[in-house]
Length: 408
Ligand SMILES: Cc1cc2nc3c(=O)[nH]c(=O)nc-3n(C[C@H](O)[C@H](O)[C@H](O)COP(=O)(O)OP(=O)(O)OC[C@H]3O[C@@H](n4cnc5c(N)ncnc54)[C@H](O)[C@@H]3O)c2cc1C
Image (cartoon, rainbow, N blue to C red; front, side, top):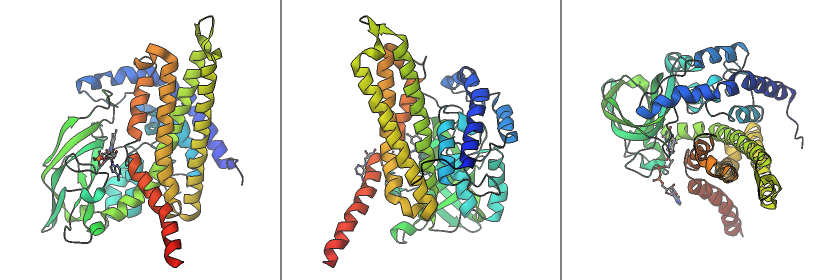
């Protein structure tokens, strides 16, 4: 077992870190100031994003997530994971490298399952960050943890498909450059359960697509992307906008999620590292009852717990990424589910501890911890709640013994 990073990963880690130091951290205050207008519904594109994206591209730090060397750098999951962690230290940084969710997952989806025409029209401008995309699965009216419940209808009508339904928590819905929506819906209600749904491309300007409202997270606006509720009323798109074929929605959804979970988790680990760093600095800097806060023994215990939890989480994600590299996503089903439970919990706990260390300052907007807490909490829901992933783990675990018993 070799825990060292490959030379190529070490080189990229140094380059991404240098870019963060030179261009991302110095712009954090500016970003917050420019995005303040989102509170009044005015979602703007940060004025300095294009400039930084060009710099990232020129530095060869672009589309790092994509395993296809024709577009990205051909990095494995293990090689990309530490880069996602470094970018995740600032929540808007991944977009500067064109490595942000949900666009990464949507680009992978188009890359793996899109027709040549679909790729030319939508993947190409996504790869250059000219447009942004959204993934519309979750619906307010049904428990979307169970995707077989998805009820938005996709009905064939001559050379078109007609879409009717309501989605919410559509990330990127407020992005000023939103161009394309990938919509999951019910196309073949009579087919076997996992062959009833399809995924279809809907350009955002199509008639009948109506963004109803923006959904803040605990009052945070998460600009410039935002999350929205969107309604589809008799939306007609040409039949060639269907991805892969009727009834293949689940197949596509499964393929989309493996690497995305590694990315989410590594970004969360980067953010948790940052919270721990802020906590340590604060505890060193303030005194109570005649001693620095860090010398009150409870804080040693808490710092120790946070460090241990972060390290354990990171190792679990690396092992998951390695299993995926070795044998594909199916080779790591238990682990992909396990990281999606373990890492958001760790993230939430570390940020919660950091908030405690900051006292009242922790729950203001002044130190970024309140926003971080909101994001950590939502991570336990995004891409499926903890319970659904634990269910997957439990079923795989129990299967081992069921098989054993039945063959005895
Ligand atoms: C910030 C944010 C961004 C998001 N971005 C997107 C996006 O871009 N696109 C998109 O389509 N969706 C997105 N989502 C939606 C997210 O994926 C869903 O909220 C999630 O999958 C849960 O679905 P639901 O909200 O319908 O909850 P429900 O399915 O109603 O579940 C509610 C609760 O029931 C419990 N539960 C469910 N199943 C089980 C079980 N088997 N056993 C025990 N308990 C269970 C869980 O506690 C769960 O939290 C986003 C959500 C958030 C908060």
